[in-house]
Amino acid sequence: MKKLKPLGNRVLLEREAVEETTKSGLVIPAGSSRDTPIRCAKIVAKGPECTDAIKVGQTVVISEFVGQELDEEGTDFIVVRETELIGIAS
Image 1 (cartoon, rainbow, N blue to C red):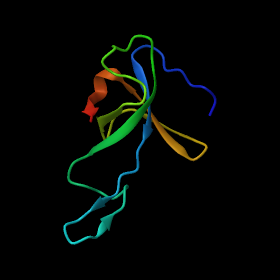
Image 2 (image 1 turned 135 degrees about the vertical axis):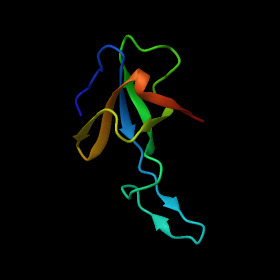
Image 3 (image 1 turned 135 degrees about the horizontal axis):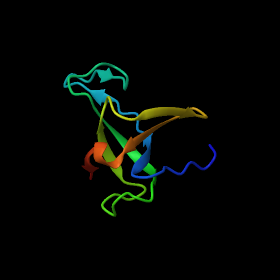
């Protein structure tokens, strides 16, 4: 991917594929419908108007239905506004 620098208060995120396991050991693949439409992503770049509260490399939680999705060289990216971030995962 060519270097993409978000403008304003936008954040470039790389989606993390998360597989969940049920109590009995069955694996639920990442694209299956779930009860809570929330997902995690890693911050790849942030715009110049973003606050210092978020940093490149952090994992953040976002809602399933926000942002603009990009697919570049087989990697899923999402561009969202900083205000659409729900929280920082530790």
